[in-house]
Image (cartoon, rainbow, N blue to C red; front, side, top):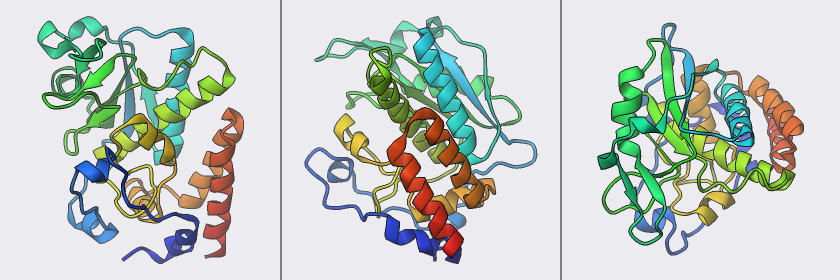
Length: 273
């Protein structure tokens, strides 16, 4: 059962339609996760000792790409209501040859995401980390049978990795920068949601929906459906009204007009509840 204060948000959200060929739910049989199921799953949540989200740059970044990292870290702090710290860079040379490949059809260099999780991040997991996420400009793939992933996270180990490789060129112009930022934020917040034991959403057009390809990810929103928002607020104890206020401010500052309008409607709906 959805907590009552989130019921007023339901009318703002669109139900998921039938998946198109190649979409996530066309190829993955997932039943979703209700708020009650989430509570019963004994989810990973922040506590007094583990309340910091760490962002770990991995590899080389241009000045503009690093700005994407900084803006994304700022948004993560607002999105989850937890402090975020950016750590000093780690070199890509930490990834051995056996955890790299050239894509067999497309030819680009790729890094094995599971290696980053288990061998780069997990051994370096800070004691006060509720989540530790690597950020890289390298393309990622999770293993045999996959072409690539935008990001990947462990549901139990509090580590994740995401890439801006497929997010466009933020150097091109202001619109391209905003597009890259939104794409990066979507992946980062989606993967962080997984680290708080949130499974893929199968009910609404939601940031926690799975995605198989760029077009599918682009048509999904940055915001969470009421069910996933309830999970996040329960897990992190963030106040939903304050969260929307801060998201509105961030959206104004970064020129995310669609997101700003939706957050304003959401805040108004919460206050009417």
